[in-house]
Length: 335
Image (cartoon, rainbow, N blue to C red; front, side, top):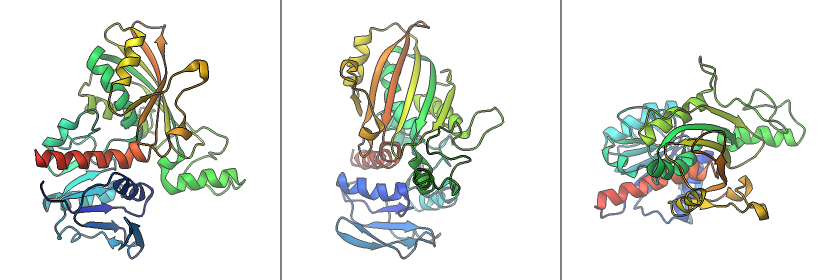
């Protein structure tokens, strides 16, 4: 694409939508025109982007009649289910942050550091993975390529911002002693850990846990990887932390693992236990990298490895990953 694209941000007033705008500005994303869209409830609101004021439009079936090249969606699954195909039918490439299209065989599920080649076979919709999956994929892909992966055990510690404004409010209210004003969770989150993200399914796992399992198989292209998951909501505002236990196919030297991570895209190694250096949620907040530390052998199994992985769930786990996909789209169009 030799000209600058016209872009739309759908769900522009939400937590992820507003971060779309922030990251677009920070990365100086090239565009000719930008359109802010949201529900009827948010239509008419004013948003400032790159020093210019924009009026939020109501998302309708005619929103994509105007020339738009790329639409960044973060407005929920039902909105994406209805409007993403409408946009795609009019020649728009949709990068969708909801769970609606992730497991659709006709839709690529992409982490640009991991499987950017899948962008090229899109048919108008590209899915952004689950926030907790994205950071895990950045960590696992180099290991898969060099050693092969037999089994992964996920234990996640996920920030309340992953539940949007309601989750943030539940923690704020709880810290202020207003625990009877729950909006997002079944129990108070302040001073608590909730092993319950999304709804429970018939197999006893939550929907969030099944997302991680199924999305890992799709992104890494290997349905044979064994992987249980336990996802936990914790009283942290921003950034997801994950303990990942991995059983590799081949033997490894620990120093080679450090070197592999240091030389892999999107990763920052923070592992100096003598000086209490390891990834922290507070430090990751507001950044786009995936931080890895506590790198050590699992002595209970052959070729076992433990790592601690932290990333900002709203940026790399949502907005930044989607914009990286859009950047790759433009690059592919130019090639």
